[in-house]
Image 1 (spheres, rainbow, N blue to C red):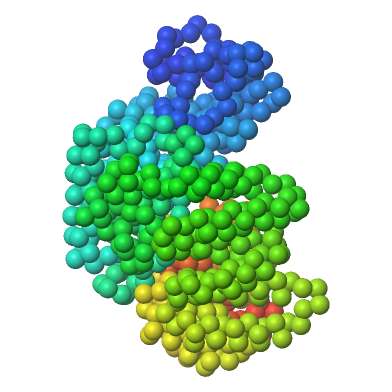
Image 2: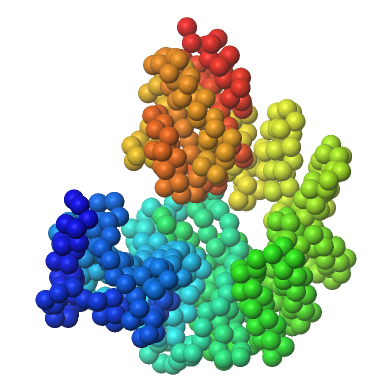
Length: 635
């Protein structure tokens, strides 16, 4: 279809779209100004570009084609996209309304059943990852297909402000979602009772009092993230959870901490597990310990808004400073500015530690300081952070053993990163000291939450040094001593991988194109299993080698890709662009997902060769040696 034809077709669909929105039909296409005035997002509080009358008068409207979809686009005078309205199915009606901020799409309304009314609502790009669905056609979200843990905490704040019981209830998992969550039947029944009780309690509170003032605004999220491994406590899969979630809200010049509690991930959506401790009465509060990890939290916030306001004026001021620094960090453009802001952030966090009025509150800020400074050091944005961590460790004599260990491990990690990046670094000496530090840490703090990670790093080091027996010893120790840790599943998989030679390898998973692949069906051919990711250039380069080998050996070999991208779309784009013809397995979770953990994959590329009888010949094969191995095996 030539562009003029598209344009005539486009103007035919414009009146239909406007009629859907409840406006009169137009004899001619609307102007850009009329379009900007008429079309608004269905969901409230969307942050998108809204030009002034003068700016809107200079905007332009033009027909566009994106793939098979046709529609029209409104742009500002300087050419920046403001709106897009598309017909994706060729029925001459708009079914996707997109809104932009600074040229980036941040929200869209979608009519997926093509009945003239949008029932899917998506926040995109910097606006988040939410995807809500209206089931009963009342323009309110009845369920979330996608929502992050941070956004759940924000939705809780909005529901509390509005005293909206339905909005609150939609943040919990349904019976169907709980059934496929991976928990045991007993645990699922317990969570159903918690959910039903929470919804009822919220409804009672909403009918009796103001839960949060309307002026309150969500500003910050924190929580303890981890994985509950498959095969423990009756679980049928790894379950990713947050515990002790805290939302900080701002009400004017003051800040409040709301303990939101536990969350679990089901599919691509996070769900509340319990009545947020911030809404519980003191005698009923369970905020003294986490739901999943049984670790202390800060300030239960029970008893409604009065108890939740228990943050001193000095702390409120510091929280405001921290919030501003976080905003500035997101926009910092130069290395010098990043160092300056990280220095300021460390200073504010140090002041928050000093201003803490309880050991629990101090623990929160000690850990935030340790995480933030260590991360900044490792990214190269705060080299002096090692000294700041060392100072905190020196002042931690009065802290709990858990907090001392927390600081020490992040100090070790940051110091190792700096030592490796030194221009004159002696890698062998740096590595030797790192392993000695890790071993000493485990001996000194065997109950630390970081002890399994320290053991895992020791296992990786032994593996890369070629000492498989030593690596297996460390991996096995993790599984036996720390079965509930987030490292246990991967350690168990790594041990399994190192003991694979001479044994059969069975992988069963969905592929990128939605089919199920079972490697047992490939018996009779030599199989090369290639773990890769789109973000790993060496692993993507390996696929050119694999394609050449496929051409050389034909049906005598079979290639199986195992992609560990967090996003299947990135992997699919690589495969399609390069026309790699073999199947590629994929599961959610990326490097922490089921496929990566099954064999404890810690880096890519990683290749395994299986002979025609189905037994593993070699693991950890480099692409440069693959041709010689196949020559020996393919007869």
